[in-house]
Picture: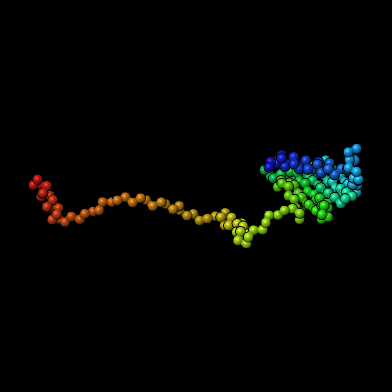
Length: 181
């Protein structure tokens, strides 16, 4: 995801959360009977000229939200600015359990933490130990290795003529046969 997309997503979240947290109003003649507005118990907003901000609110039904953000410089090779947002949300679900979520959004993306979030299943023992050994293997591979000549393919065998031993007598006989013919 590009830096621009991350900034857009973070900005949308920063403006959407306060908008959704506004006090509930009657919806006019079609509103459900018996619905009562939920009061805002506390609310703070702070927006600073340097781009940093902080807000929080708590509602009468137990919802609590806190969020803050600031802009930091990117890495040394870039002039980009990075917006960092961190916060927390807690509420009581329909089963009466308090759900708490902490999060940070920065150059590494959105990183939520909460007991209610799904986690991947645990790996069997052999797979887990293999994964733990990976960093050691990568370190060993990145260490300088001694120069080893590359293995050469064997050269194909070419049939060689077999030398024949000729005795002096045979050589003399073949010479005389050539002269007489």
